[in-house]
Length: 152
Image (cartoon, rainbow, N blue to C red):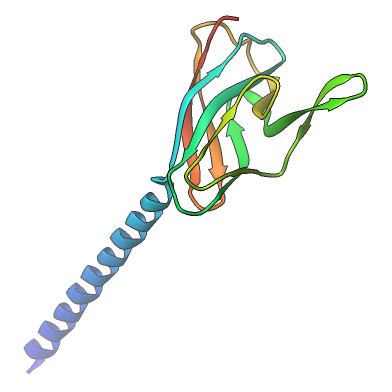
């Protein structure tokens, strides 16, 4: 008599494990699909010894705007999304809480405009060096971006 009960228990255990694995796969696919709309390319930095910057292009192939809202790296004490703006005495830079990447468009982070600021570099950045930064998007999550240091 105990065999049918054990068999039923095993069958339900297998069913629950299969359903759980299926849900995990669906969640992983949904997460991947969200970041599949964001493409980042041409990431580079310039030689620097205390503070540096990363420049790149972000493309949003999605149908809704995306927000770049954080950045990280292991090469600097702090990594922030910045913009350059004009003041009476020239140009200045400031941290911005987020940068909109419009649906179906691209935004280029370049010298004199938006950029990723590397504050308190742990080592000098020399031509040919390579490192990775992480960019966080509101919907797509974290995306790791390889960066190469180009000469001036």
